[in-house]
Length: 123
Image (tube, rainbow, N blue to C red; front, side, top):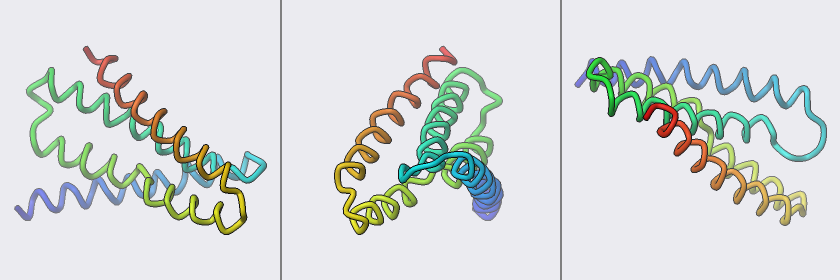
């Protein structure tokens, strides 16, 4: 159990650092009120977890510890749907309700499509 917790923590820490760096870099290079950094991280994280899922289904080396490290830890720390929700609330406070709904819908639909694409890429 301790080993599993450490694997998730290691992956989650790495994923969180990657999320921060990627999101900040994208936001620094974009103008406007749309949170492109978080959006890009969410979609790429969904694609990545789909790829990992596909690999786990096809290869024995993708054991439970590897899944805990990469899927639960890395992808869990990297994807930022909690950030999506707080940014959505911020858009409401800025009276940008239409943009908030667009952001939520496109994030969920594109995230599902990216996860499905990741799975299909491996098959």
